[in-house]
Length: 296
Ligand code: AMP
Ligand code: MG
Image (tube, rainbow, N blue to C red; front, top):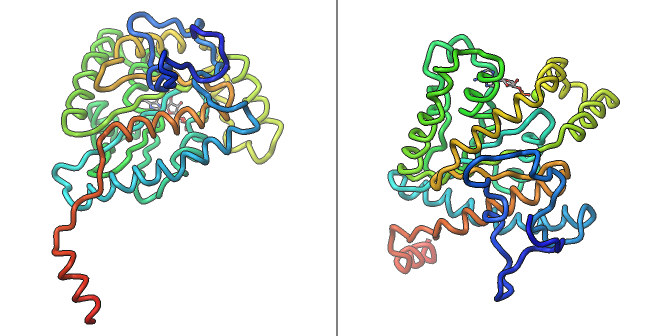
């Protein structure tokens, strides 16, 4: 990650480099083994001890941005922007943790969360993007995908669920689909929660050591884990093939949960701050309404 300084990178004027620049997946071939899952790029504090406070401090800012987005959705649904956060990562990488700790910072009314599982018999009857389209965020909403269209080039590719010529076409299809979604007014932020194999092993073992975590454990996760290199390779290809300007991939080092939560919160804040959101103007005569309220 360039400079060995632990604090946020700065340019010559002392302005910290945007986190979206630090975490953007490299353009071109991606080698995940070269990206440190325990790194903490851009983190402005000391570490684990002050991270919850740093993440919490983003809450009010993020909450205001989300409320502006929502307000625009209410006042001008046809033209209101939307946000879509895609969360992908191996088991235990913390997709659920991000939903709880980051999306939990804003009003739940403004969040539309969808978790994509093994396709149901009905979903299976349709094109793989059918269920994705139906879950896209409406005007003023922040859509959050816990897994996504990418499963159709990840698990599907590794497990040979369809022939290679079928999944092979999907990268271009997904790019075209995302470009259309972006063009229709949705800001797309794709986060790959990058966890190391060693850390995943510890997290799986921890689930078995704690009866309150049994519900998170799925014996099948160990079979997926056995195919770690194939999954990493499938992720590398998806990150390389689908890292467009309108739907960029970010690699979030996720071995440290405290960094992961802060990074996704800050990335979302940065993204939304760059959308030029504003409060919608009144569609009524404010002075006249003030008089009417006073007289009532
Ligand atoms: P979890 O996110 O732990 O609840 O697990 C959901 C499971 O659904 C994971 O094993 C995914 O790989 C699987 N899954 C999600 N989408 C698809 C898909 N399109 N085809 C096959 N399996 C999928
Ligand atoms: Mg799971």
